[in-house]
Image (cartoon, rainbow, N blue to C red; front, top):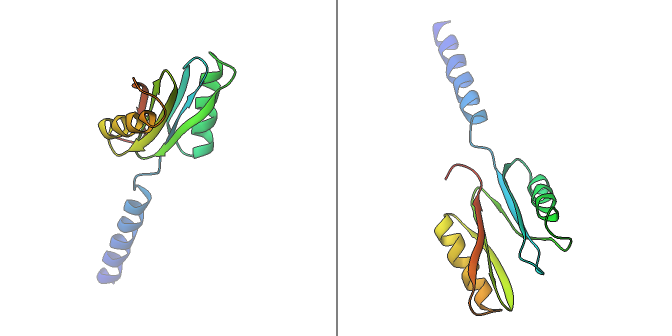
Length: 122
């Protein structure tokens, strides 16, 4: 009987630990290509919610906003130059910004990061 009780305790503990595992958290950055306005979100439980909030935040400043990048348990960044923009995501803010600058450089010179954001514990 004691062994059965111990087994039940071990199984219950394992189930509780599995439920406490880190949930996926989403973020997004929206951009107005016309004026460079941005909107962002982080730590949402769905991609849709993250994109929706970033779009609504961007629409406060521009009418041509689009989702530039979404990310899950990571960081996203947007870079903009005189002739275009680029966006990317990575595991750290530094890597996301570097990737966004590289993406932007394919369309424009003089790119600079205009927004970065992370979702989840960083």
